[in-house]
Image (cartoon, rainbow, N blue to C red):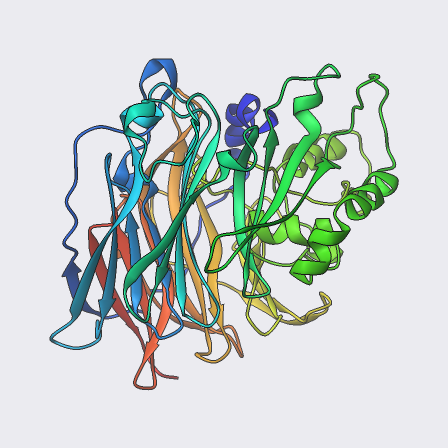
Length: 479
């Protein structure tokens, strides 16, 4: 895929563009609680291909803040008993934890597979949580979790388990391979509060050469009964070369064709277009306004090429979407100089960007249509390693006008011999959503950590979950 083959080139380009971050002294976010979760790690990894470099549980764990402000952590265990942990009263001296074992893939089920994915979704009303485990080709057919009524060995499959959060119990599980045996689903989202929207590659035998590159499956699965809803086949509008080998610069007809092919799916989901649905599946927000164009896959490389040609990069509009349909776990930890803006629940956008190669980040707040509301320099933590050898990159990862907080994540990183990133430091910074002033910062470890905003008793907090094992709670000081 494009993303894989150009990874090292893009990493190198990303780092060479980042200058030092020189800022005032740090304002700390107080650490008020550290809670160890009752996970039970098991040896082994998921997937890994022929080189057996697989995905560890600590690297693919998932974390979400539920509407009731409880913290949910999905810890995929390689023995097949995936753990869902709920943390309540985390802001008190006596936090409460609940544990639930879910059906999940084992190391043997994913042997020698290059791709493996995991995700955790929560319905907006907070009634249900959904765990997802994706594998490109199922192995060990005699030991498949929650075995279906037909064989799915050597087929791509997405195992879905749904949990009733009110009663804290599993209410069902489902294998997508029994409905679409050639659909290799790579992403999911919840739409209209009652559907799981899935999209992935078509792995059926090709009738046209390279058909697998642009053919995609789309499907709805109902919540909570996990019954298959409308499905359709679409063509990827980001692919510029058609089967005949002729370049195509106009993809509007293709996009219209996708919408026509998916009329019943769009009507059921209440979504205006497949483009809107795809952005939500892969980036978690609506299509970003054109003036907030961000250098994400594949336009990251495209804009650099555009600069080299001497053309105005602001005129560059890639077809239908500036993202790559990768797996949930493929390069999901990578960060670059410019990352996608974050859309809040009220429709405001927050974006970090650098106006030039040298200089500090600017944090901007934009209205729903992309109009600039406010912008100011983001005075991140001073780090002596942020020089020419290493690069410091930052991203907006959460925002809440109700809590008046914008949360950012920063890393000091360098490119290693494999083309991947080595992390040298990692930290969070919180800003006020009204005037974008800094509320405080806190150092993290360099281990995989997911962060999110939470609130309790009228106060705002940052929850940071390290490797699915430890939760650290930071207080965001009141204005």
